[in-house]
Amino acid sequence: MERLASFSSDPFDKPPCRGCSSYLTEPYVKCAECGPPPFLLCLQCFTRGFEYKKHQSDHTYEIMTSDFPVLDPNWTAQEEMALLEAVMDCGFGNWQDVANQMCTKS
Image (tube, rainbow, N blue to C red):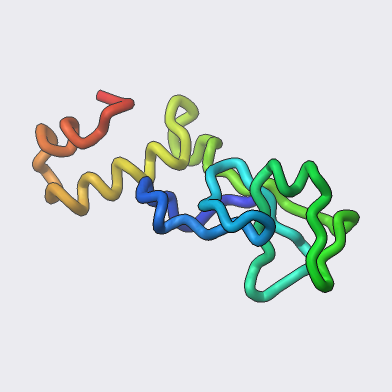
């Protein structure tokens, strides 16, 4: 599985599915043979075998997710990114505000 570079919680920051144009939520599929730009599909379009122009349903693909540990096995990459974003928003050392922004961890 490929690791994602950005984990924004804003749904409008997420790329659209090339099949149905809905905003992608994890996990989703990236065609390993098409692009650039990346050819991304939601799981529903992928399981239906969506094809478009040069993209064929038998292409190799990667599952895109941030649900894996990076530094701590008890935290996902998505949670670690949320922590870094909270520190950037609230300021280093402002742990009470960081804790208030972190809903899933204490």
